[in-house]
Length: 472
Image 1 (cartoon, rainbow, N blue to C red):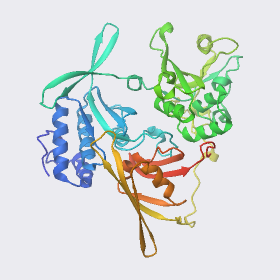
Image 2: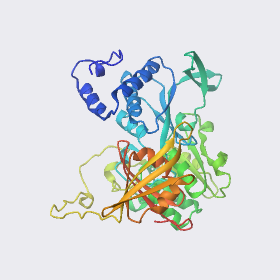
Image 3: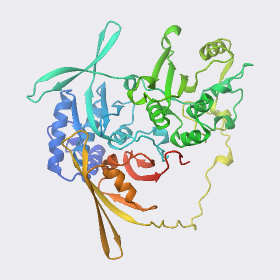
Image 4: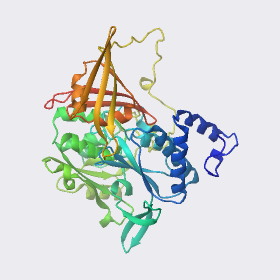
């Protein structure tokens, strides 16, 4: 394949460039090259005209690969205001991904084509996820800004069934406009005030940073039980906390979250902005607890007064009086904690703590292969003509000696019935895990642990728990 669809870029030329070699390696996964070429031509034709379009991928891997190849080409051309809106299988949840030079393309594509959105600097962890988001449908949007006085609207160009172009206004929420993340407060308190309720301390002591700033703020709120806090620690294993994770936590614990962010690019009177308020969400109507947070200097903290004075009045006064000193990375021993991130000041010496160094692994130790109680093979059949896709059949088989056993699930509650039928400590293989997982991963009563690399699901661990007792 030497030339594809008159796309005049080096990637598809006859030149034996590294980019072309990488491309050829990727398309080895194409099952039906004719379908792949058809999809790629369709997507690129619209993209080059900056026509926004929807794509329902489902379990069509050739279509997924054609879509991600389109994203690579757009990224190479460095066009502005291109975003991907990914929707969950049911369409009730979505996430935004920006396609820009500021982001690593492979990471972005990994998140788009995979199942969960992870922080880049923490993606080697196996995250505990509540209300797991699995995209099945995408919108590629070429967004144009239109200002009307102080208001900004967002429009896209689309194409109807007859090929006629029309303009459509799109609603872009705060998750796309501004999606700040939280880390630790990068200053030391030099005043006589005790600011520890905000996780701001007078000295650098790693014991103060054992908990992520969001977990610490939730502890200070006093609305969670010790058991809930321990479970929250499993959910929040990252150094930085994106806003969308707070929505997941709110749903998991049935608790309202209000996040007030200080945006210092505005004048002081306009800096305080509410970025998250789950009290306005229809799915949170029955929640009767609330956590009020402040996001300041990229640090989540409890939003409550100290000695009757609001926190921002205190912070502004202390900064004005020079009572905050920037934390230098070379002076702290918190490099292995949740809160450390790359926004610290540069090192000034090469001192290190030998206790934090890696230990040599004894190669003589052999890892014992895990023994499974039973191994299954499973596949879902779905109706793709409806949205969301609806499973109407699951067939699962397993072997006992020479006998092959077949389990057939149809009708309603297929996923729940399948999970209940599985042996404890069993292993199950799926035809297409990241698609089939859409139908069982959010089944009530199960904890979920996902292992993913570059957007590919390697493993999902499902653990049953009792509704009134969370597993820790």
